[in-house]
Length: 218
Image 1 (cartoon, rainbow, N blue to C red):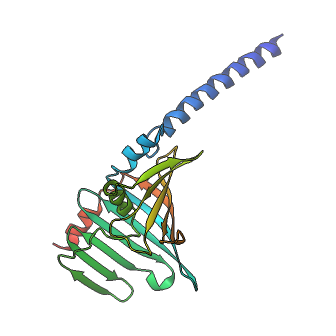
Image 2 (cartoon, helix red, strand yellow):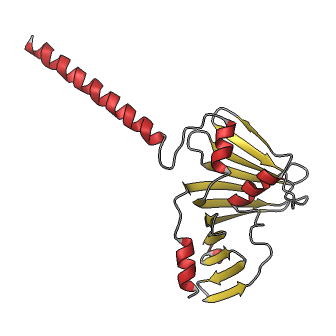
Image 3 (spheres, rainbow, N blue to C red):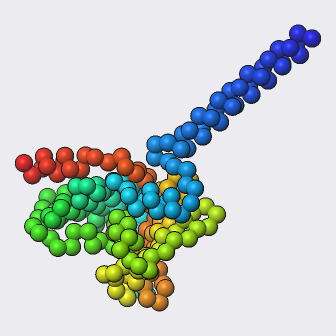
């Protein structure tokens, strides 16, 4: 009898702990860097109003003859109009950093200790490899559209400044977290020429690029 009572109490404790865990896990999924996406409208509202991001991008560029893969770190702060891209792989781009700061372009090669700065650079945000480029293009393009499948939402746009090689872009976003998964840049024949896979994505957590840039230019 005593054993049954102890077993009953133990079962109750396990159930209480399980309920507590599930409530905590649910709150975790709906806070911080994650969000509970309810509709395409929700994802558009969230992703198109991103204030900053930091991520690792695996970029594959394909042509008729070959395919090349690059790994870069990208960081962006919307209000400060700052975008930074740092080469990770292959070895020939390791240490190569490109920073757009408002109207200034800065190119650095750490291994060679070389720095080049361009003032009043006119193409600051026209980088088809950057994530924010599709945000801006999607909002400006009257032909932009969005649709979904079981696990992701796709934003599709036709860049105004595109050409036959960058005719269309498709951004895939995770429904649960609101984070970008990948982007495809297609040519006029609908062939994917650029495929970008996003890893280690952090949304709205970045605020230090401007400080670093200011210190470097004091």
